Image 1 (spheres, rainbow over the protein chains, first blue to last red):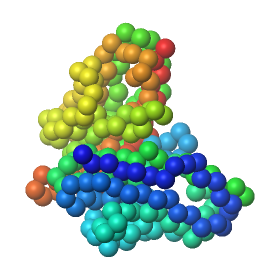
Image 2: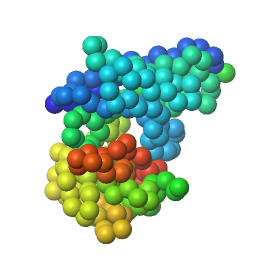
Image 3: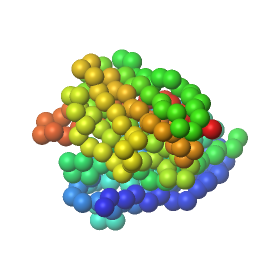
Image 4: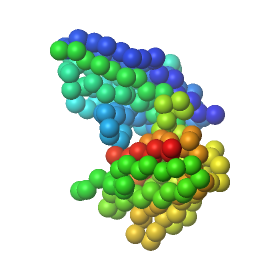
Length: 112
Length: 116
């Protein structure tokens, strides 16, 4: 079945540091890939997405590239801010499936 | 455009009771999905509705059920509550695309259910 593996957290960084959160997947066919972010006490917000190989999704300084060869969709940001502190979820939707399969989430804390 | 809304935001129930949660999708979105989020199991898919019909169901017992109304609003019901049903229940809506596919899912703020 489909699965998503995210790097273990929690991750603690200083403000302006570089962020990478690794995400790899197993899926049938050619899935669409997503990053969602969850702030404390809130639901999930779509951060970015990519629907085919080599697509790069980007939003609010975050980027992720759909790598079919390595089945990966790593999230990166060049300079994190305290306001980026949240839990980040990698997710996929494969083929004709309508539901999302999520990774376990990575807690990010950015210190001033 | 208003986002996905869920009511109530918080609920406290006791074991054995039943509960109904409500979700109003983004205007124009006809697909509604429900997910359960717990610290131990993470985010798990419950079911998906489109045009008042359940199209997909996750691996949950029959105590979990749902429905969708003609205006695309959806409710989920959990009967005979157990302690393990304590969770954040998230609703997501999406547009229908050609070929029966659905577009990106947008989530509501969730309903936090605590079972005592």
